[in-house]
Amino acid sequence: QMFKIKGEFVIDPDVQREVVFVAGGIGITPMRAMIRELVQTGAPVSWGLLHVARGAHLYEEELAVLEAPQTRTNRAGVQEALRTWVSTKPRAWYYVCGSQRFLDGMCSSLQALGISSDRIRCENFH
Image 1 (cartoon, one colour):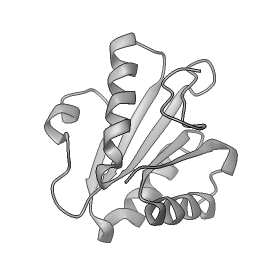
Image 2 (cartoon, helix red, strand yellow):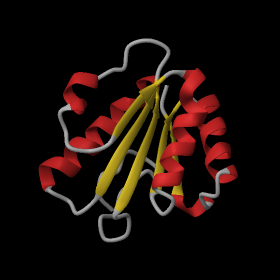
Image 3 (tube, helix red, strand yellow):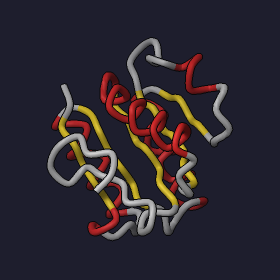
Image 4 (cartoon, one colour):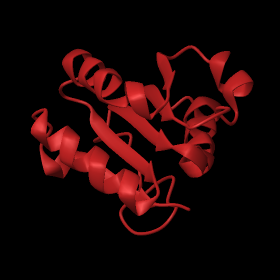
């Protein structure tokens, strides 16, 4: 198990070849570490990022230079952004990190959009 934060929030590059990170606010912090590890090790994982924040998006400048699709939005735009990600990455594994309220909303929305619960990993980070 690589990239372990705690619980089941891990990426196995042999299994999860396509990952979308969905971060709420400071939930970007552990995802930043996972992204940096993927980039530094050259793991064969295609990744993308959806970061939802009320104000400034932490680590935006650092992450924006990486060659991967990234979306930054606020609460008003999150559902549309999530629909776009799911329509373009329907077979990806979705890693969701943020407050419990954010997790509940995003995980429910992902399932409603057709992502199987076994392809969703959630981590409470507040």
